[in-house]
Length: 132
Image (cartoon, rainbow, N blue to C red; front, side):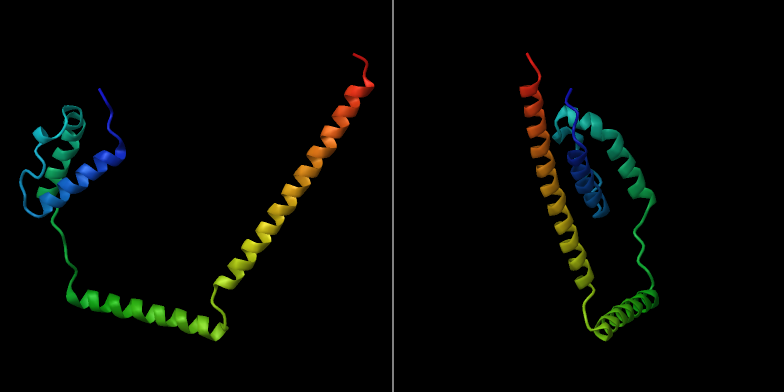
């Protein structure tokens, strides 16, 4: 029996749950699925059906949504004002850090090549000195 991947089962369940929420009682009949997938998906689909019956989507009150919207807009404006006051966007230090890390990586790489060359020269000299 083939085990279905998490991605395939997740996609199936997402479609199934979406259709259940739209009011379709039998969103995806198991008969339409390959038998192996139906066997694995059945318990998960049963759980989704039970949850769809019990849990109902909740929409927050309009006053809360308006308050949340104002708070998010004000926070974004404060952030933009701080960046403008600083005179630079915050990406400059990050870019400098990335360039520094790249330079260190390059230096380590060069040191590795040098160490390899020194090691290979010493090991070839040792083979020449030692009698066979």
